[in-house]
Length: 401
Length: 106
Image 1 (cartoon, chains in turn yellow, cyan):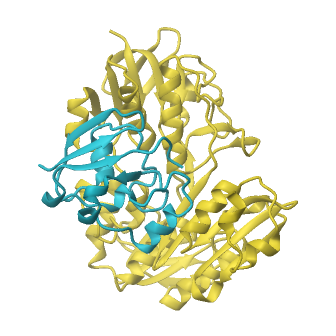
Image 2 (cartoon, helix red, strand yellow):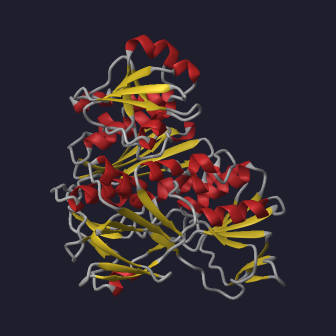
């Protein structure tokens, strides 16, 4: 008997299964995950879970019994190798064939690999999956000097955990500043200063040429610079997992192309999460996001549409990161702004940068300022006054009325 | 197992068995209680797990922290007993707690 088939085992996959049941679907739901774990939360991997502040049980999105009670068939450690869009079947690497009524591709993304001499030495890790973090944690006790390749959010979150745990951390960034791809020079500079003050060494415009060591990594080489290291953690971005979709003839271009109903070029196939290139009607352009809130919302939208409803995706992109005692919440894209208004004092580590484009609010970076962040989310696209935004005596809430 | 009663905005009730140490948000998620999105997974970052605690329970549940309070501050559905359910840990003393769900999460 045909049912719903979900390819992938992350946030979008798990939410889609839950949403299908929540919306009353009583047929078969089968979820295929390459990983051997029931669906878990990814954000804590570089934060609380790495810091040993969160148990494995608490990492799971839902307990195992949830899937049993709701009759959601989890096929763990199984990869879907082919989708046949003519017969509406999937084929797994274990040789199973399963028919689908509707299919969700929620294959997420994988770590971009750094291909340099010595990259096969032990002690070189990526951080994307639970197994990656478990392997890192096993080696942490014997690693005092740690090099992090890539000064993006994952790298910096890992740096903050490891420095707080007493390790010597060096961050290697190939660009002219950390966080260059995602934020403004001002914010990059703030995080650079923060990490340096905590004891991290940061090298920018440093391109890793190779790793040296007999069996285990001992040195990282960046041309003129050779850094002794006990462990390397690489976080240089992700690649969307679109191969199975592409092979099935589904239209892909920097992700799986979906419409605002999360439907792909095949009407029976939907996609959700990091792997989608989707239209955002609020920002008026197509996006491919690396974001949990986006994965969850797309999964809900896809579930409704898989059940024959007509639900449209319309959400503002937002992100968060925790480093040391800083809680960073971001909405929109700061690059969209042509001017900024800063509210609060950067020195006190409690401030907000509002980004405006022709006086309309387009993005917010809020540091330890959750209330201002929430207001910013509601003010997106609205005309606001620079002076009001930067005046801490001005009640931002009044702008919502 | 402490019991939690969720009351949806439309009056539909869900009584669930919760586990000590879980948050009310997690209990809702684990039991498919509609109306709690919990996008951030309990980081107190998204404010999509808003509940309004029944007034006879609010003393036992307690008041929000500063961060939580500011996340709630501008919610148009906020009421005096509003809380983010990811920040409420379940224990035996909350057995029977009643929480109301707002019409929308923001």
